[in-house]
Image (cartoon, one colour):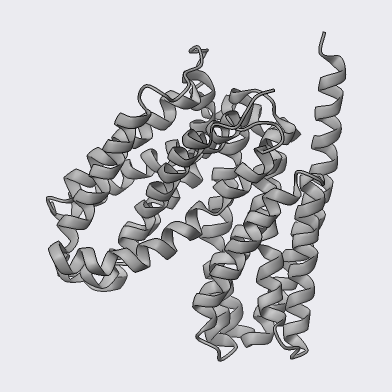
Length: 383
């Protein structure tokens, strides 16, 4: 019986933390960036979104590339390319060149987040795989929480150049450690035709089902953290809600050891909707319950990737879909929340949360049933 390679799981998860820090090192230092480039904060904030836009545009392409050249090589490429960009940024080049490095860094980030989940799934036993995927699902929030504690000390000692150099050095060191231990699959045909890649991924319910269960979560989570604490007159929620969600995300992955991923995701969306309704009614701890339930969704979504896709290439394609649709939710959520808040206030935000959660509930159940049925049929048809 295969045993989980926990050391490899830990190293890949560390790579995920460094990938999320590609966002955090700019998002959490915007005032310092504005001072360094002598521009308003709004002008340098575009450096945050550049990485996400690359994922939005090229997520399926990255999944197809990883399926062709192998997830191990893709992860290593992301580490080395990300390290190179961070080390260039440490030189604090002109703003236009810094922007170019951020766009290239978006490619590195995409390589890491597309290859990371199938690598972790492959390193886990069948019994531990849902828990391991739940662990991967917390990488972004955990990284931002750690970065918020570490960055001030680094900035005090050496400013932005030290922060970027340290990030690059850690990426490079991790690549060196993983070079001999990361698995490498045989190179297969790489499809670089965007139309063909999108048709292949979105033509298979097994590939796109985890992403369909994930997109409404990314729409709600980032925007909800940004707007609801102030809208409800409770600024402290900005630190409480992410921690609550992280804890339940791990639980979401673990629950998928006993229950189907789409059922766990459905419970998450149902609890999110009920928590928002409870907040409208003024019930105590309702908003915390809303985000506690919401945390089940990413754990279930990432656990769904190996549950419905057995091969590394198939898992890479499914992760490419998650990268794209996840960024659709992240990019669209904040402006939509801003428009609704301006027009309908706090009540409008909570009803928007209910509507998005109900939409997510319908999507995750429909896609999950179809994907699990398709996966079961494929198993039966294996010669």
